[in-house]
Every structure is written in structure tokens, then in C-alpha cells.
Length: 634
Image 1 (tube, rainbow, N blue to C red):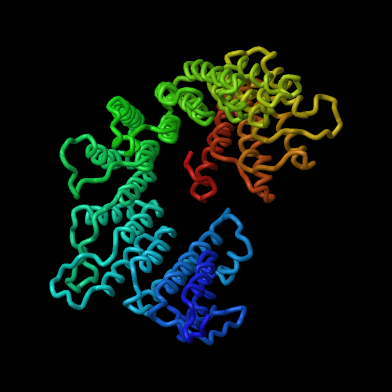
Image 2: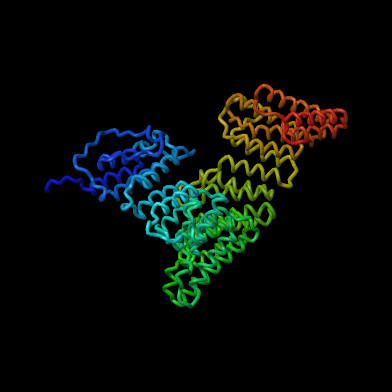
């Protein structure tokens, strides 16, 4: 083509967009500056020290300022992406980025520094005539993605002040920015998930809804009227309510949105938009995280209302109602089940499963996740009524197994088995727990288990732990009961009496602690002491992983067994065990006797009628509390 003195802005824009995608903000800024023939300044000295470009770039043909608007926008997006990648890199358990994205954060900029540079370019470097809503949104969305709602709102007011027309003579003017910019502020407040940010989000939303003027510069006596909120504004606020468990506020807002579609009058501009699926999900999440006792009932009422509206629209073939997404979909049912699971409402959870099946027939009903949520709901019910919860949970589990065998559900995961084992353990149903464990152990070697659709999971440490707990809480008091628990430990590699081989064990301290608690409840102090000594030996030999908190529970359970033991020397043996704990603590063993351990020793002294030792120990406990060695008084 013909030679020209100006660079093609599309070429520069393509390169800058690529750099923006990877968050390589320094390179994007330097490249734009050289292309324009200007130097883009940095917001502070810290940022000035990190400017670098690996490859020298010469641009004989310059880009004019009148063409540079989209290129500036790309640089602003690059700084916002750089800030986001930096935050993800400094957070724990973050994902690893590849070398290209990591290059933008190798100098460990603080996210706030990257965003301050983006705002600096927008306010002081860009030609005013090139600033668009897209430019402002590139900066404000960066603040929003970082959860910096307050900083985003401050930036928005500065931008409004900069864009204020010099021809404005009155104290009030319409906002120069669109609703997307204001939504970025709401998103930032929502992502922070703090109460104070929630109040700021509600204040801004109400100002948008009522068109209340906002003072854009303190003391300037100049106000702007924000744009009316759209569906994203409502969804962002509902998301805030959902994360913080503000069920009443979310319910009030969603009801105002749902009422619009039920009226026959012509919609007004000030009417809220009709809710989307995301709005209903956030409301269900608010019920889930709420501490209100009636939150599950209100969540169920909302779901029933949605079904009623969806059924009416289906009967009337109201196309407008179909577009409003009022028919509950699978996600809404699952979020309603999450609410019931967290609040421990098994009856309501099963009712939702039935509603789910009716609303989505022909194999499109509840999936394995939905049934698992209902099972966990019964698990929480077990804290109040363990026997009834176990009976209902077992029926639901059998239904899940039948659906799995018929191909309507995938093979059940171990978590479902362990949930039922936990329910049996809480109810003390040892026989049923052992039968379920036997099913897991036998099925992995059975011929029918080789078929993928019938494959049962293998039990893990928690499975065995829960079965021993079930035996411990059962009403069976005979010696055979304890022997059944010992057999479980033997299957996991615990050495039998006289066995000196050091075979590998599949045991954890938690599983052994469950056995210790069983022995403690039966008052079998000698067996508990023997097991505790074996645990210490296993830890020294490296056959058992050391866990300080769990090991402290081991000593406490053994002391409790001694407290229930009726032998004459029980108090002496308990005293020796506490002394052993104190010596381990003094030698740097990272734990010392707890108040529970000392109280158990006091109980042993009381059983033996040792009043003098009881008084001396009580005085010693008081002294340790005053010295800060024991957090709670006796």
C-alpha cells in the first residue's frame, strides 16, 4: 500500500490487547508511549522504578492522539489485569499461572499500586476527548474485581468531577457515566463481603433507584444524578445479601422484582426488572447463610411460589413469563436443597426432591449431588433426633442405591456412605454401621463390583472411625462389643498380642482415639493404657503420624477411663499419666495437660477419697491459671 507517516491504530491496538490479556501492563504502557512519541508518567516513585521493556521498539511512524483512544483503553485493561494477577499470586493456595502471565507480576507490585497507575493514566494522561465509558469501565471493573468497593467509588467520583462539563452552571447534573460503571462499584462491595461494604452498596443502590443526587467532590456543592439500576445492579445487590445471609433484605428485594410481572398495568421506567435465575440463586443463598430459624421455610415458600408461577405461565402459554426465567431450573432446586442441608431440615429436603422429580421428569430430575444434600440434611437432624434421622436417612440411601443400580444415578461416592455411617454412629446403631462397612469391604473384591456401573467405593480411615464410634455409642455392654472394635483395628494392621512384626498400618490417631473413647466409656483402663503406650511407640517408630491436638485427646480419653475404673490404684495411675504429660511438655513436646485432664485427675482423687491431694491440685490449678499456663479457671 501507499506509505504514510502515521501508524495504523488497528495494528497497535491488536498488540496492546494481547498484552492486556496477559496483564503485561508495563510493556503495554511503554509501547503506547513510544508509538505516540510521548512519555506516560507513573503515579509514584515505586512504580517508576519497575519500568522495563525486554525488547527495544522503534516506531518511525507515530500514532496520533486523535486515534489513540482504544489504545489507551487497552493499557488501562492491562493495568487492571496486572492488579488481579498480582492479588492472585500473593493469596495462599492460588493457582499457578504460566510464564507469560507470571511475567507481569514478577516484580511483586501491590494490586493497589497497579490500580492507582490505571487511574493516574485515565485522569492525567489521556486526552479528555478520547475518554469514553469504556475507558472508565476498564478502571472501575479492575477495582470491582479486586473487591475494592470503597476505592472504586472514590475513583468514580474523581472521574465524574473530571468529566463535569464546564458549561454546567447549576449544582446538579446527570451522570457522565453509564450504569455499567456504577455496577462495577456494587460488584466491588459485593466481592469484599463485609458488613460495612454492604451498607455502602445499599446506599449507592438506593441513590440509583431514587435518582438521589450524589456529591462528587466534598465541599464542591456539585452533585450528579446516578443512572437508574438495571438487572445487573439488582443481581449484584442480591449477591451481597446472599453472601452475608441477609435473608429478609434479599426476600424483600426479590418480592419487589417478582411483583412487576404479576400486574396488568403498563410497566413504568422506575419499576424494577424481572428477576433472572441468578437473582433467585442469590436469594436462596441468603436463606442458606441466614441465622433466622424460619429461613428454610421461607426458602421452600419461595420455591413453591416459583413453581406456581411457572405452572400458571405454562397453562396460559404466557411467552413473556417464560422469558423471565421463573420456571425453577435444576440449579435453583439444588440451592434450595443446600439451604435445607445447612439448616438440618430433612423433611423439607425430601419434599424438595419430590418437587424436583415432578418438575423435571423423564430422568431429568435430581442428580447425585441433590440426593447427597438431602442425606446431609438428615445428618444434621441426627443431632436432635438421632434414631428418627437414622431411619429416614437409611430409606433415602436405599433409594439412592436403587436409582444407581437402575442407571438413573452414577455409582454412589464414599462420602454418601460415610454420611450414613456418621448418622448410624450418632444414633449408636453399631450393627447397621458394621453391615454397611462390611458391604464396602466385601464389594471391592466381588465379581459384580468389577462392572463400572455397580462399583462401590473402598472404605477409608473415616469409615472405620465412624463404625468404632457407633460401637462406642451403642447400648451393648458385653465384652463381645469391644472385641468387634478390636477386630476392626486388626484389619487395619494393628498388631495382635504377641505379634512383633512391624507390618504397615492403615491407621490414624483419630481412629485409635475412637477406640480409646470406647474403652473409656466401658471403664477398661488397662486396655486404654496399653493402647496409649502402643500409640507412643508407633509415633517413635514412625509408623503413626504425630498430631499434637489428637494426641492430647488420647491422653484425656485414657484419664477418663481411669476415672471410671474402680480399681484401688486408679488414682495413682492417673497421677502418673498426668505427670508424664507434664514432663513431655517441659521437654518441648508441644503440649501439656489441659484443664480437662486435671479435672479428670481430681475426679480420680475424689473416687479414692484423697481429699488432701485434691485440695493441693486445686490450688496448683489456680496458680497455673494466674500464670497464664491454663486459659480457664478451675
